[in-house]
Each structure stands twice: as C-alpha cells, then as structure tokens.
Length: 416
Image (cartoon, rainbow, N blue to C red; front, side, top):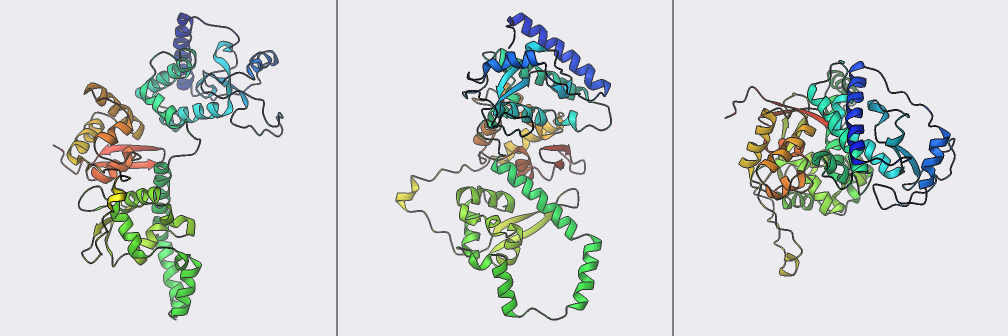
C-alpha cells in the first residue's frame, strides 16, 4: 500500500466503499477503466521481489514486461483493486490498491464473479435486497482479508477462496456437472422436431442395413475396439461406487469411477459416456432414462441386474487401502436441504451459505460443503446440486446453468 492505515481507518474505508458500491449498482452505470497514474504504479512496483500479501509467492515482473505482448506467469506483478472496478471502485482509492501476484488477483476475481453472479447476471435493473447485502459482504471480505488478515473472515467467501487456492482449473465435480449439462443440451437438440424430420428423410434414402464389417469399422472409428476393458468390467466398475441400495444416477457413478480408475474415462477415446452405456451395457445393468422437471433434460438411473456376475471381494492385502464408504443419511439430507430452500435459499450459492449457518447453529464441529458431505455419508467432491438431483429431485426444481443454479420448491409435491 502507498500509505498505511489504522484498523479504524480500514473500517471506515469498508463502510464508505459499501455505500459507494450500492449507489453505483443501483444507478445502472457501467464500470470505466482508466489508466493508473505512473507515480502510483512506480510506488506499487517497489513490492516486486517481496511476498504477495495473500500467498507465499515472490512477486516478479511480467514475462515479457510488455503491454503489447502481455504473458503473465503466476507470480507476475499486478495491481489489485480491493474495491473492484466492476462494482464501483476506481483509481482514486489509492490506499485500496496493492501489489499482488497474477494468480491471486485472478482467483479473487473468480471469487467475486461466482459469489456475485445474481448481481452481474441481472438484466431487469432491479437488484434484490439480499443480492445487495452480498455486495456488502464481498467488499468487507475483499478489503479485510488483505488489510486485516488475522480477523475472522466471512466463511462462505473464504471457502470459495480456499477451494480456488490449489489451481485455476475447475474441480472434477464442476467439470462433470458442465459435461452433464452439455450432454443434456445435445440430447435436447438431437430430439428436436427438425432433427427428427431430417433423420426420417435421410433414412428413406438409406434403406440398406450396415454390414457386420461396416459396424466393426464404425466401432473402431469411435475407439470402442481399442478399449482395454469390457462392457462387463465397466458395469462392475460403476456398481463398485454405489453408496446405497437401489438405483443411482449414471453421472454420479461414472464421475466417481473415473476419479478412482482413470482407464474408464471414455472421453479420452472420443466416446460419449451415455452412448457407451446405452449401446454396450443395457444387457448388464438396469438403465432408465428419466426427464427432469423442465421436461427437456434427463438423467440415466442405474440398478444392478441379477445376471451380472458378482463383483469380486477385495483381498485381505488390499482392504487396508480401501476407504470405508458410509451409507448416506438420506432422510437427514432431505430435511436439511428442503428446510434451507423453503426458507429462501433460492440459488446454489445461497444454499451453501444457508447450510453453513445451519451447521453453526447446530454446533457442528466443522462447516462448509465438505463437512456436510462427510457427516452425511456423501462423496467429498459432491456439489449441493448433485446431492439435490440424487436425493431431493422430486421436491426441488433446478434451473439455470453452471456455476449458478436457481432452486425452487416443486409446488405439485406436498412437503411435510
């Protein structure tokens, strides 16, 4: 910082920024970027060679240090606005502009984008009061997490920050959600009236059935002939990751399978997982396609068939390497999630915050998504949206796209 601030001055700065930001957002103005003065940039560049204020990296210059060919590395020198430009900040708040490594600067921007999605995605001009409160929460975290690092920080925002600490890359569960959404969208497009009509017309001109040789060539082209596992092994692999009796979704089981056993990742062979499931495993598994509440997208639900050979039990020497899987506490999962959504947690982000408040109120040893999953017997990587789809899909509607989903109670289903 160009100037040092006392704790009271920092508190006053937070309050001022919160008021200025709310006024800026309500006005509907757009953020304007302006060049930072050379004197301030020179002052902040003196931090090059010192530690980044939010991590252990030593701040370095850009590589190369050119505005025309800007190729920063993780430790590159950047100027971070603790009062972000996008929510009303500007270059006049000199005490709230600091030197920071490029990686942490990018992570902080990602946290803001994720946490304030309802504000940034709003197109009506009317910002809900709870969204404006989130702006205040974010600003307090943005400033105090750097200038008052020893102070207790907002748990939900801090958890987002910690989750992004290891890498810029999205988590496996997040990628699986995105892949699932894209697959659902592709299926929706493939089943449009126009696509069905064109397929019908095309079939009139291609009455001749493929020969076995052509079918084999087709399989080779799609990579199925080169796989180092059989459909039976793939099916058994899915069932190994069932955490409870009865049916479970294919997306959930497949996601757990490829995390533990990467050889089953069909994407590496340019094969669509749901297509492989339908074409190769229908005789081995009970497969049911169920449409979601919107009537457009769907999920596959998997059950075990009696004719599938029993999965071999692990050897005694292997047991010590296995992690015990706790059966999910389905009733408690439903009760907690339904309670939060009924009380106003109408987005996936709000649900995360509401569950943390619930955990604190009920004196849980830990709080956050991982603590929720651990205590209730769910896979550690499970997102709240995955859990809703798995256990509460009959009572809660899910709309929207990653990373922000909207949640609502299904009024057609009576809830006790």
